[in-house]
Length: 251
Image (cartoon, rainbow, N blue to C red; front, side, top):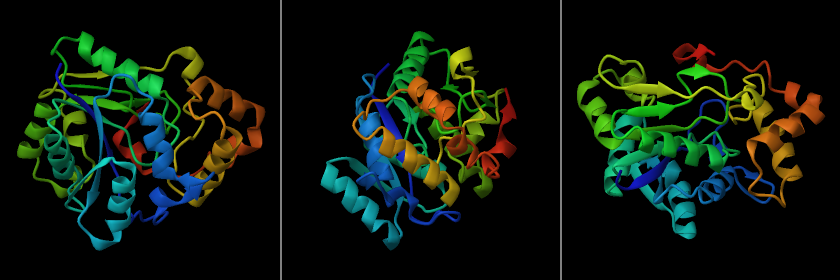
C-alpha cells in the first residue's frame, strides 16, 4: 500500500472562531490534542500539517517545528492544492485526512479505516465516513489514494470546490471508487457534536478535555458515555448550524 500519511489542514483565519487551532484548552493547543491522538494511531507512517503561506499562520508553523511535526505551506483558499503538495512532500501514497476541528478523533477509527482501505487491494480510491452522517460529528476520517487526490486537483477548476479538499472526489462517484463506512450501532450518534467550529463547541470540548486530561487515549465509547452522563453538555452545541451539511446526507 505504500506510505500512509495523515494530513491536517488548518489555518488561523477561521471565520467563526478565529485562531481556534491554537486555542489553549486543558494545557495545550487544540492542534496539540489532535496531534497527540494521531500519534497513537498504529497504521500511520507520518503526519503533516498543511497550513497557508499567510503570515498569520507563522504561529502554526512554529508550533509544528517545536513538536518536530512536518508542516507544509500553500495557498490559503486552495485546500485541495495544498493537500496534494503536503502529501507529495512527504512521499505519501495514501493520505488520511483528519480535519483540524476534530481534536477528539479516536485513533482506533483512523486505524480501522486505513485497514479497510488496505484490504480493498487498490479497488477503492476513497474510504470515509462523511458521505453520510452516522458517526458523531468530529469523528470524520478520510483515507484516499494520493493519485486520486492529484487527479482531482487536475480536473477541478471550481475554487468553491477546491476549498473543501476532497470534495471533488466525494461528489464524483462515476470517476472515483468510493466507500462510506457506516457507524456501528454503539457509535451511531450523529446528535453528539464533538467538533470545534464555534464558541459553543469550544466550551463543550473544553469540558471533555479537562475531564479526560489524564486519559489521552480515551476512545469514542467513553466520549459518548460522558455525553450521556452530562446531557447539559451534550445539548450545549446541538443546535449550532453546520456548513458541512450541504455536502452530506443523513445516514
